[in-house]
Amino acid sequence: EHKFWATQPVPQLGEGPPLDDGYIEPSMTREEVRQEPYPLPKDFEWTTLDINDPKQNKEVYDLLSLNYVEDDFASFRFQYSAEFLAWALKPPGYHKEWHIGVRVSSNKKLVAFISGVPMTLRVRGRNILVSEINYLCVHKKLRSKRLAPVLIKEVTRQCHLKGIFQAIYTAGVVLPTPVSVCRYYHRSLNIPKLVETRFCHVPRNMTLARMIRVNKLPSSTSLVGLREMEERDVHQVANLFTRYMKRFDMVPLFSVDEARHQFMSGMGRGEVGDGGIGRREGQVTWTYVVENPETHKITDFFSFYSLPSTIINNTKHPLLEAAYLFYYATDATSELGEAGDAIIKKRLLSVIGDALVVANEAKFDVFNALTLMDNVPILQDLKFGVGDGFLNFYLYNWRTAPLAGMKAEGDVA
Ligand code: YNC
Ligand code: MG
Image (cartoon, rainbow, N blue to C red):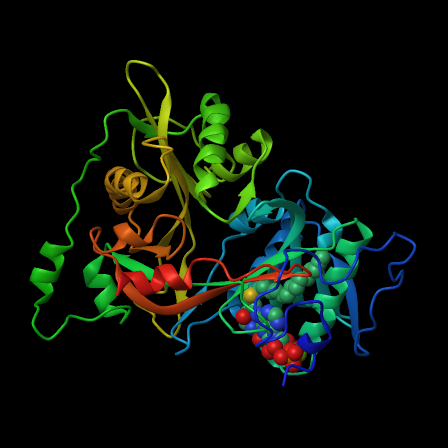
């Protein structure tokens, strides 16, 4: 069935939950790791992409914008911007050796890519240094030639050379074996455009005018003390994030520098904190904090990022401007269980409600979220509709029982 995945240290389909969390295959010393790159079919060669070089950054952008992930009906294709890729591929401690490409030997055209970035992941009680693998892409003309397994083996080898033996990755496709499955939800902002581009449709018992009215958002935010995040907030935000994420079983752990990178460095080149909700050139992320006016403590924050999609074969609307809910946190309570959940839900309705207002003012067409963290209980109240996409989460060389996500998804219905 899975000729490649059957050979890899991942739980095989139908294996059943493990007795204990831990690795599948032991780590190696540097000398034990294969020293030569895996062979490529003739006429192709390996390359390391230097994302600091605008030309190479653009080469990755060009490859992905024409060949990366599409929806099931080939109507929309992710169009990560060059700025987004530079941000995503260069977190603190990144390794250029983990930005791997394949070129045609004769003309040096980039035809495939895979990347990893380092991070610390907590899975249940265990902290693991992992690489986060993303942007696996093979040019459309080179599909089904078993190039993907070679890319995966090569990035694995490069991780091993840096002493990393575990990885996390997500995919729309089902492979051996998801540790969690989330569903996409969509909050319509620009209804006329979403209808025109068939992203959504007017239900039979609705009119376009009524649909616009029902989904209308206020033009200003509701929370007292809400403002754009600034450099001086980084420590408090990192701290708040760490405390809040204790609620969940699989989370990244961010140092202060990593928090700065995740929440600040995608904010564009303009002046931060000028009060307006506009868009700065090259802006990738939007991060807002709530500062208590009396204590000056940061009590909440939210973040979302811009990830447009090409609308395939549409000349009037070439691009769907989508915002994706990223991380958020609140100190509304540290209480666990149902009582805590109810307090969190109430607070998040305001916090994420304001995120919608900001995204709408910044002219996004749609706001997307997954069924993870504390999203599920607020999606319906905030007028998100269920999407048809799923996102599967995977761990490489690590066993743990399935994590919430599926269960949470079922709770919505
Ligand atoms: C996928 N998305 O099952 P079997 S997500 C992993 N992730 O192997 P071929 C995938 N494996 O089943 P094609 C995969 N998609 O025979 C397919 N596969 O065992 C497996 N699409 O290879 C597949 N980007 O080269 C099969 O297929 C084998 O030419 C077939 O290439 C696949 O970034 C692909 O969706 C996805 O560009 C490159 O279709 C191509 O079709 C494409 O014949 C559009 O491959 C873009 C797209 C994927 C986005 C992503 C996460 C990738 C994770 C990779 C796994 C990382 C493991 C951990 C490594 C580090 C370990 C350490 C330490
Ligand atoms: Mg192939």
